[in-house]
Length: 299
Image 1 (cartoon, rainbow, N blue to C red):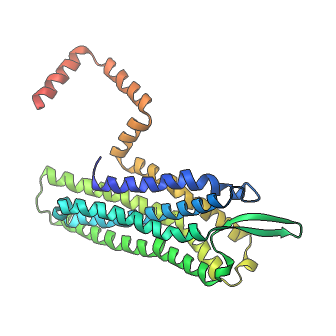
Image 2: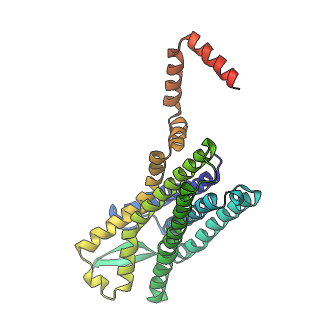
Image 3: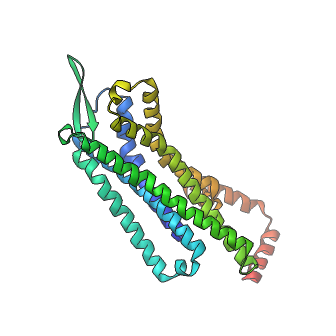
């Protein structure tokens, strides 16, 4: 399991786990409690964890698309020691960049008091202080749209197009036509489908939230035009942006047989071991001895 693609997937999983464990339990109560009950510290931590997780997710998927293209088009460079060093540097840069982009949300988040009526106010965890003016939320929203969505999807599309062209050329004009080469191509296509599945899920899940943020902060009359449609759209985008972190392991489990096998073995260890023992006890001693001879012969 210690492959380059799986190292990226591990990084993706850590980011998803941070989102689920730190952000979701607190932010999900926005539509449960009338007022933010957790205080300023939790407000800043939840905003930081959310931006960090989104950054790690999108930058990891972008790096995975580049890595898949390199593995397909430049396999010698990909397998070299230099390629392994580049992997470590890339993962370090991913987390560093995601952290840098998440700092403003954590630093400027505050507890905003909103007047519901003349005698009642509620607390809201809000990342855009009013004293910074209208330029700050517009700038942050545009930076996040470009950094977390538009530019990464453009890069991913470019590298997947190049990779698809390379795979088509390899299939049409194979360098060699032996079983080992065909197995290698099949494995590359399988990993590429896994990464593509993760990218499609990401693009779908974050699209509604990105549209709402752009509309709300760049439309001068957004507060007056805010209606039931935009409220439902906001909730859908809100849920889908968190749902992405939950769907990634399901996508991996559905697409990758290796991931599915290890998932069953380690997550359901007790059930898996019981099934294995029942299978072994159902085999007759004579059959086991034949299998042992066959295995020894192969070794």
